[in-house]
Length: 230
Image (cartoon, rainbow, N blue to C red; front, side, top):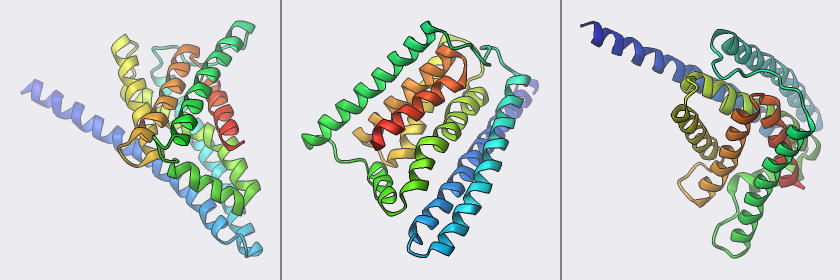
């Protein structure tokens, strides 16, 4: 009976954490939806400006909430020792190594697309169209804001919610699963495009575990988005 009770509690705890994490995704999607609406109404400056103002306030609140939640998690349970690590010359070159790896994945992606082995990612195509319609705010959102939020949700909060034990197996599974979910959120279907997005997510996850500081994976994410849009 005690075993069944414990299993029930563990299952209930897992479901609650899952719902909470899905909630983080939902509030992030609401923010991007506001920007989508502003982009759609770019030809109506007054309405677009009001929507951008709403987005900026919402984005600030979202960032503050996620940062608070992430830090609260680390204070409660942080077996891997995540925190702030000083940027040294060694860590800088290691960071550049991760960046080169991400660029190699991007380059392979471009080659496969040019050879018509892969189709152009619908997500990237949509972003490019939005940038043309409403350039400044879509560029600022994709390059500056999205990396912070996505790293906290897909790496920081996710790993601490579901793969908090500091073992090789948990680290491997955490990076694998978080990368796949990251890929699916960008590709929305089972395809080689999903694999490419997931590969980028895996690099970011490994970097997060390696540096033990979410600022490093965020910097990588920022550089990747910048180069993709360029």
